[in-house]
Every structure is written in C-alpha cells, then in structure tokens.
Length: 636
Image (tube, rainbow, N blue to C red; front, side):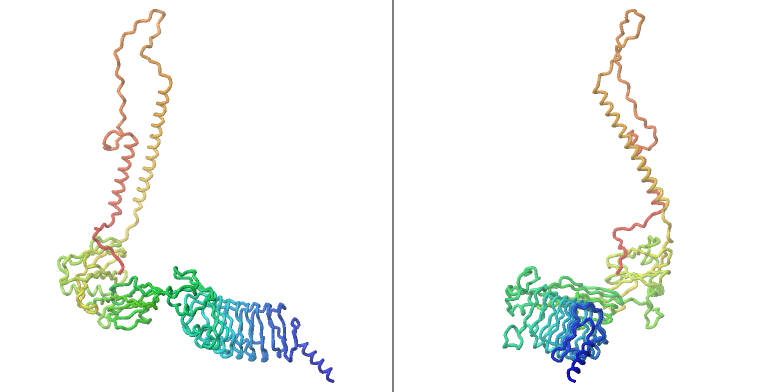
C-alpha cells in the first residue's frame, strides 16, 4: 500500500502547482518558481505550504492581502523586476516566517506605514531600482530588531526614516547610494555597532556631520565590525567641517572636492589638513535704525557672509532669543518680521551670525511711534477709531482756538487728483523730529498717514479721489519724549479742501496735434519737391554751357531787296537787364527778410503749430506745476 499512497501524495502536490509555474519538492520544502511567465497578478492557487516563491520578471502591478494569505511558512519571496506601483496595507501580514523580500526593479513611489507590516523576522529587504520619493517614518517598525541588510539605492529619496534606521542594532549593510540625500542628521548611525558597509555614493552631500560610526577606521581591535565607507560622487565642500573626516586617512578611496574654488577637483585625501579652513562670519549689511507707526509691520534685515554659511539668530530688547510666534517670525536668511508693532517692541535688537569659525553681531534700533489720539473720543478705551482721528484732531484744534486768521496749514493748487500742502517754517515751539500728515475723504473713511522730514514745508498729495471732500491735519513729532509718550505729538493745524471734478480728455488737442503733424508732413514734401526742381535746373544749365556757344545776335542784319547793306550804327553797350526779384507777396508774417518760398512756408507752419498747441495747452489742459523743493507723496 505504500507505493500507491506515495503516488497519490505526489499527484495531489502536482495538482496544487499553478499551471504556468514549476513546483519543486526539495528536502521537505516546496519551491514555486514562476519567473518569466508573463503573469499579471499573483496566482491565486499557489500552495500555501510554499517555502520559496519566485515571481520575478513578470508584469504584476499591485499586491494585496489575499495574494499571500495563510502562507505562514514562506521564507523567501522574490518580486523583482515587475511593474508594482502599489502595495496594500498588510499585504504581507501573514508572512511571519519571511526572511528575504526582494522588491527591486519595480515602480514604487512611496511606502506607507502599513505597506510592509507583518514580516516580524525579516532579515533582507531589497528596494533598489524603484522610484521611491517618500518612506513613512514607521514603515520598518515590524522588523527593526531583525533586519540585517537594507538596500535603498537608485531611488529618488531626499529623506529616509533616520530614526528607524538608527534603531536597527543588527544591521550589517546599508546601501543609500544614487539618491538625492543632501544632509545626514548628526548621530544618525551612532547606535549601529554591527554596521560593516555604508554606501553613500552619488548623492548631494556637501558635508558629513561627525559620527562615532566613521571613527572606527580599519582597526579590528577597536571595533567588532570595521567599517567600509563609500561617499564618492558627492559635491563635497572641503572646509573645516570635514577636517575630522580627512584625519581618518583612507588613501584607497577616490573622493574629490567640489568646492571651494581653490580645492575643486582635487582628491579629498590628498588635500593637506591645513587647507581645510573656514571663514568667520561677517555682517555684510543690516538695518541700522527703523521707525514705524504703532500697529504697522516692522521688518529688520541682517545679511552675513562666511564659510560655511552662518546661522542667523535675533535677540530682542529683553535679552531673550526671538523665536517664531504669532507676532514675530525669524527667517533663515536673517530677516526678522514683526507683524503688528506695539510700544513694547521698541528698543535695540541684536543680530547674531554664527558658524564653526566664529560669530559676528550687529545692533538694530527699532522705534515705534505711538499714534496721536484726540480728546473727544467716543470709542471704548478712549481711543478713536482709525477713520475719525483726523476729524477729532480738527475739532480739538478749533475748540482750543489754534486756528489763526492765517491758517497754519494750507492746501493749494488743488486739482482733481492732487493738492499741495504747505505750512510755514518756525510754527512749532520746540524741536521737530518729523511731521505727520493725516487725512481722509468723504468717499473713503480710511485714515491715511504720511511722514514728512522736519526740513520740508511742502508736501504734494497725489492719487486723490476727484470731486471729494477731504479733512487734513498736520502734527509735529518731537524727539525728546519716548515713543509711548503722547505729549511728544503736537497738533499744528487742520484744513478742509475739496478736489475738482474729473475733466474729460482733450479731444480737441488731439485733433489739432494730428492736424499740425499732417501740415508739417505735407510742407516737408513740398520743400523736398522744390529742392529737386532747383537741382534739376542747375544741372541742365551746366549741361548747356559745356556744348556749342550760342549765336551772337548783336551783328544780325535785316533782309533787303538786293541793295547794299546799310552800315550798322554803333550801338552803345547795354547794361544787363536787372535780375527779377523773387516775390514776397505771400503774407507769411515777418520772416526776417525775403527768403525762399520753401523756407518761409516752413517757418510759418512751425510758428502756427506752436501757437495752436500752446493755446490749447493753456486753455484746456493746463497741469499743476510745482517747484523743485516740493516733496511728492511717498508711501511710508
């Protein structure tokens, strides 16, 4: 009975093998070989007792939990060189005995937290040759203690789960070559005592932070696993930050320096240690002092040079480091931005630039100007709203009798969109730091502020609304008091004015300009024709003079009837007939003499065009002129 039973078992095993695959029983283990079979998915009838499953070089596109369900004895799974783009959550959830997983040569773009959950005893994970750009931080959590070989080469990784990799005590080989990694966190490999090979070739590393892993060298007595380190093909910046690596003395490697310019292209291990130098920071430019109105945005700038690039910090007036908050933000380039300033933000700020070669500092003074507030305030807290400050100041000035017979502040030369604000010198009783103009209109209740230097007594308001009423007040800011002292602001006077209504475009001017241009063009054509005609006459006269001499008519005798010819009487010499004068009868005005027709005609047209244009400009489109001393409006 034994032989028939054995045949029955073999027949049942052969029936469980998928049709396009080959199944082998070797030493009581079942191997299912399905490579190069043109499969579009994992065969559903694979024997669940399979120990080795090879599905390489097919066209499988996705993996899910049903594909490997109940295959608890599977040890080696090969899915290389397929078209896998997605791995479902817990697709390998039942593979508790899996030791080797090959997913290289596929089209994976990312690995989620649950993509590799299940194989708790995994030792070899090969993910090279994919398109991985992101790996979730917890993607390797199920096999941190067992993994020995991790291959992530030839992907698009800028960041890898460093925390997970650093917690793999059994890791022997780590391949990260041919990626886009530009920085390694300090101490990323400090706990990998068993690591014997680290490949960082062809990434974007400009520097390497000191790590105990790299200090092992090749002394077997110093560490149980001598390290083989490869980092060629990176744009290394050979300065003092890499001096520690240069002292490891690895003459058999071919790493080269990419910068600075003096060391570019030289072998890393051949550069003397003395040439690995850094430059201390230097503050190139910074804001020296800044004045802003209360509530406005304040931007403090500080730029520093150095090798390596300095790290920028700011220290506030309270001697505390300024960090990012809802009100302030410090940028890596050295800019500090305070969104809404208050009186407590005033003071001295210190910009600090640091790098391994030293540090540099610069001081910036910030002054916050408190907004002036009128006494007749109706809003809560005694502070008027932003649209009634000018009206409140004007009412207070009128109530105190500050408006004299000759107004201290005048608005003249008012047009539809502009007006010239003037105030007399010597009006304030004390020293003036700067003037402040506040105004709003009947069309828009928003209050507008303008800051004017103390040396100016004119200010040209521009971009006004045509046909609107404006209230304007002028205040003097004194430098004696602090920025939070309201008594430092003094009201000089207020004024009320209205802009002119909008005027239509000067269509008549455009028509006359076009007509004058056409007249000048026609006159030019006529002048050119006259010049050509004159030149033609001159050329013809010269041609006649070079031919035969004309007959002299002074000796011509009259015809007779055959008698002797009478002796001609001697004629007195005649003077040549007077040369006819050119006509000056054309009434072209006083042209300074009788010139040629073309010249007089051109001058008359020019004068007529100028007179027409000047008259139109003076009558219909006269602009507002201003002296060179007037200060035009600028945004503060």
